[in-house]
Image 1 (tube, one colour):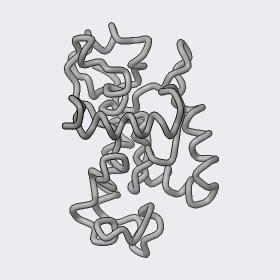
Image 2 (tube, helix red, strand yellow; image 1 turned 120 degrees about the vertical axis):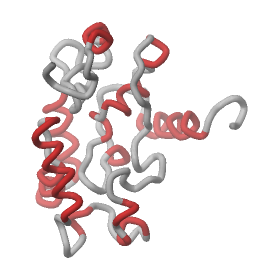
Image 3 (cartoon, one colour; image 1 turned 90 degrees about the vertical axis):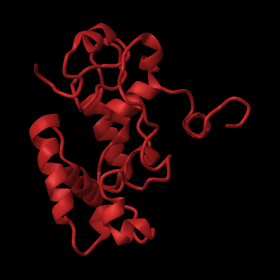
Image 4 (cartoon, helix red, strand yellow; image 1 turned 45 degrees about the vertical axis):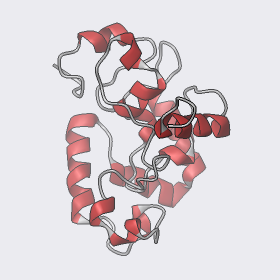
Length: 173
């Protein structure tokens, strides 16, 4: 800890200084190598919106790249990610690997998004166009912040809905 701040808090402050004030804005640092958009992840949104201090118990995270994790899902199982040989999984000759296909299948069926589709979009259109399309796709109609891919809830304007939800990581109960 440095001056009362954890390493995670310091990293988040650094990211905030790079991207300006925290708002519904996508940036490269929040797109993990596997194609997960950390900006719409429940753990990132929980951290960004400080829901823990608002009485909601849900895990917090500042994103895979900012934590230097490369990818929470794949890094331990992929030597290319572990050795910084690729920035995104689509750069690998084995793309998509079996592990990525498994994670993608789970996210398609439970969370209404596809990491493989995200990676293909980035490969074909570039990161800037991907970020723009994600911001439009996941923007809350109520307040303009981002909606969570894990449950479809805006952690900014729908906290009561999140607080009352029994299964925090499901779209429908």
